[in-house]
Length: 78
Image (cartoon, one colour):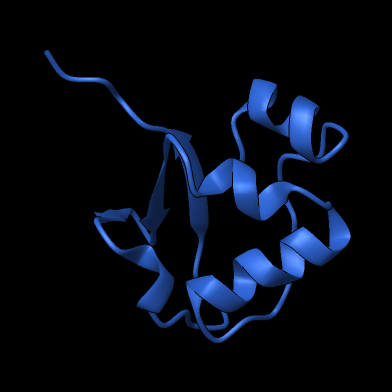
């Protein structure tokens, strides 16, 4: 699922997108094929949560058929 502003800029407003992918990397590649520039957008300043858990290196994470992946704006600390 995508945040509304992110979806507006990168997917034409689509917030919920269903695709089949074995890994988060494969998911991002599929979405980049569908929405050119998506991969660049999610590799900078975006956190990835898979089934409710945020991963520091999400690209290598395996996905289940029912996994839910959220792309969230990264929070800045200070």
